[in-house]
Structure formats: C-alpha cells, structure tokens
Amino acid sequence: MANFDVIVIGSGPGGYVCAIRCAQLGLKTAVVEGRDTLGGTCLNVGCIPSKALLHASHALHETHENFEKMGLMGAKVTVDWDKMLAYKDDVIGQNTKGIEFLFKKNKVTWLKGWGSIPEAGKVKVGDEVHEAKHIILASGSEPATIPGADVTIDEKIVVTSTGALSLPKIPGSMVVVGGGVIGLELGSVYARLGTKVTVVEFMDGITPGLDGETAKAFQKILKKQGLDFVLGAAVQKVETGKSGAKVTWKLRKDDSEASLDADVVLVATGRKPYTEGLGLDALGVTMTQRGQIAVDGHYATNIKGLYAIGDVIEGPMLAHKAEDEGVAVAEIIAGQAGHVNYDVIPGVVYTHPEVANVGKTEEQLKAEGRAYKVGKFSFMGNGRAKANFAGDGFVKLLADKETDRILGCHVIGPAAGDLIHEVCVAMEFGASAEDLARTCHAHPTFSEAMREAALACGDGAIHA
Image (tube, rainbow, N blue to C red; front, side, top):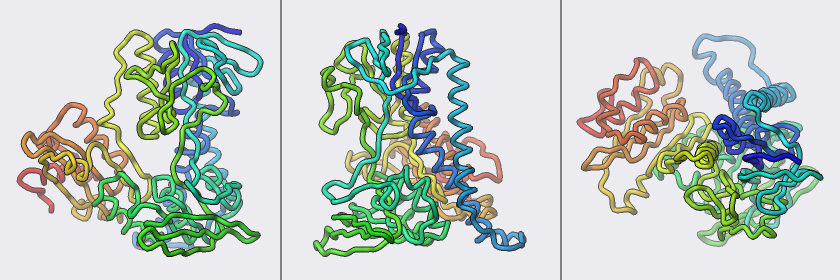
C-alpha cells in the first residue's frame, strides 16, 4: 500500500494530462491503468491510429488523383495493407511510450492494473489498496450500440471503431451505421482504399449538431468522393453470415424497409461513459439520467475527495475537453482557480477536407433570437488552396450584429482543424470580426480565408 495526494483512474488524455499537471504543482501523484500501454482509447484505439490511417489513405488519394496533374509521373501506387497497419501501430507506440517518458520525468507513479474504489479515499488495484486525499475518475468511454436494434458486435464482421482500425484485409464493401465524426472519418479511410462505403444515419442529415449549412456542404463533398448516404433510417438488425453481413433498416418518413449486404459493418453510433468495475453504485456516487457521473462546478462528485473529468461527465466527448478539465481539477485541488471555457471548445472532423467549428451555429443563434451577421469566404478564392487542389469548402464566421463580437466559426477546407484556433484565441479574448480582419495574415496561406471571412462581416471580402 502507498499513500498519495492524488490518484487518477485512467490514463487517457484527461487522466495523463491531469496527472502531469498535479505533479507539476507538487502533488504526489499516481495513475491507475490496466492496459499494457498508457494513453487510453485516444492513443491506442482512437484519435491517433485513426489519424495515421487518414493520413496514409489521403496520401494514396493524392498519388492517384493529383500527382499526374503536377507532373509527377510513374506507376500507379498500390497498397500493402499489412505495412500500412504496421505504420499505424508504430505511430501508436511512439505516442504511448512518450507518455511513459513524461510520467518518469514528472515522477508520476503508474499503478498497473484495473482500479476500483472500495471506500472514499482508497483505490484498489489488484490485491493492493492505496490511499489518496483526492481521487480523480478519468475512465473515459466505450462504443455505444444501436438503440433497439438486433446487433451482435464480434469485431470481425460487425465492428466498432476499435475493430475497424485492424481489419485483416481491406473490405470490398462496408456499411457505416452512424453519420457522426467517427463513422465519417473511418468511412473516408476505406473509401479511399477502394471500399464501397454506405453511411446509414438515423437523423435527416450527417454530423448532428454541426452548423446546418456546413453539414450539407460536407455531405456533398463526401458524396463526390464516393460515399453513399441513407438518411432518416432506423437500423432494425444486422445479420451475419460466412461472407459478410446484411443491414436492415426502416425509413422514418414512411416506415418502408430496406436492406444492404456488406463485407463489414461499422457501428459508429457514438460513445457512452465507461465506469464498469469502479464500484460507484456501492459507493453511492450520484449519476445523471444519461449514465454520466454528476459533478459540481469544481468537478467534485457527491463523495468527499472524489472528482470526475472527461467522457464520464457531461459535455462533448472530446480529448481536448478532457485535457482542459484535467488541468482545471489539478489546479483546483492545488488551491488555484482552475477553469474551462466551455464556449470555446473546438470540434474537428479529420476527413479531407477537414471540418472544424467553434462557438455557436446559425441554428443556435436563431433559436436564441440573437441578431447576428455572417461573413463567408470560399477557398476557391484562396491562392494557396487552388495551388494545392484544395479549393472545396469555405469559412463561415458568425458575429453579433451590434457589437461585432465573434460568436462562432465553421470551416470546411484545408487544415481547418488548425485554422480554427485563430478564432478560438480571438473568442477567448472577446475579439470582434474587425479585430480579426485588421490582423495581417501571411500570403499565400490558407489562413487568409479566415481574414477574408472576417472582412465579409464588414464592407466585404477583397478576393470574393
């Protein structure tokens, strides 16, 4: 048994960042992790491996679609799937080993095994019980199933995002159940690799919650890339056989039934908090109606000394949201004023082009009855984007009609996930669209599209 100031359960982005910040603030800190490697879902079977495959498959797309246009001639590039998976695994290894190094550097103890909380202030790992003044739950989330449907996930034919990252071969066809971020990213990977991909989504549009105009434009671009969409469809069952699976759904508009055969079915209907085995029921931890851990404004549960962050509490299930909460709770425990600005948390879809957003959507502003103005600029008017065959998409900036304060931004285009942070910083400081418009941007860069959208909130863009 050992005594600690803080024990964090879970080593995903929220947990490991929280632990390192606690150690920086002088707290004796340990992290409980049962996987053989640190980093949680994100580094092992989520964010990082999916981005490796997105990068590799986009590089393949470039060789097939754009190399010849640039005078880069040669035999058509083919895919060695085993080597691509090995590259993905190497990327995972580099990142997880990096967290181990950071733990050693900051003197964070790794308690290897799965943890539970037998009573307040104590964490059991294996046969050992450790004591801590503060326990932080950062156990993350797991894939959700299809509500009300007859589906058995075997991670071979019917897979979650985890199985989709390690298929033994590239399938000829795939049905993706769910038109959210995970489904579209992995669907894009396989579409570029030659798989016939069909996305079946319960709602009437993809990426629920995204700005409506942006979502529609995004779907058109993906359709041009070869993805098919069945919208407003409630999946009833997934039947498996020797050669694949059959997905059956009902259209909500008329209750008609249809089905489609596929080699692989990817169930990407979101994620749910993972709290299994922690002993929260016996401990009396208050939960929300949606199965999340209830916390106050300082991330404290109803049990003294017990906190929770990341995917197990309310809010978007995003790695960077969990990281910010990890830093905030560490600072709160250390007596500082930890804080997260939930109005400025960006979201990114890492397809090509990327889609990024922060702040309010038009739909939200209309529902609030808030007067606003829109500044838009197409990447077709951006010289760098045209040179890079990346003219699809636009920047859409939303600002208060009276004060000009930036309220939100939505981007489809090259490096959108990086460009969005210019607006994040501007919003953090309460900047106006004019502030952004009057900031000099290097030429030629993709970032000029951000400035042009800001100019469009005033007298008008220059290059429109």
